[in-house]
Image (cartoon, rainbow, N blue to C red):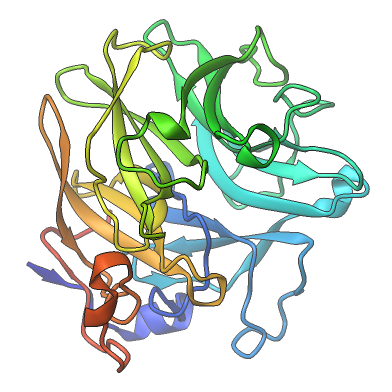
Length: 338
């Protein structure tokens, strides 16, 4: 076991502990070029970092070498670049042909929320629009776009068509041009919220993320709410092994303790990890990091390593949440540092 304890280098260069980072919909990029992890947030703590510009108009990038100690927030995108923009959600960063692409959803006053890509030569930004327009369909209210590359090497955006517009939220896929600047075809509806046998009546679809298992099986993580109202993560599997499916839903969620909007990444140790936020209470959202076990057929949780579930657990575990703050040292099966 590797205990990720504080040391002077961590505290000086990476002063923001994973227990304290306020984050929604965490996406972690393990960047082998720099040997560092990066995540992208909409919030900063002015008490800790008074020198950092604050407000709803920024995306910040955080850097880490061990997934526990994170750097001071650094502005990597300002929404003013896009003109009049009311909100922007769920940034995630992918590497495509040597460049870094930040995907998020943006809403202009009096219009629909749509997903678009931003591009930079560095994971630290600055990020600028990759194309002139959003890529999700005009007239569709969308969010939570993610990048998927098919077996032919072609890029797709997988995204959610919002329940606010269609009632029964959809997970959709859209082929992209090779330069990621525009759509290269029509959207395809992959499945709906009600297709999940574990979902309640909310109609919500959130946070799709694609992953291919060691045997070649294509799976997708996505989130919704259980009948009891807990935010949850579930898996679906493509019967064809391709993006068009058909998609077979798991009968029960992978995690249903009020954590969701999950993604997978491989730590520098080689260990497959899952990140999500928990609880689904805006002010208290923190990163949960799980060590995962994958087989040719499925994905399972081995252990949660941050301890952030300690006082935030929900769903059927809510009554077991501890009142005091967790102060233990995060413990990994393998050293996550490069």
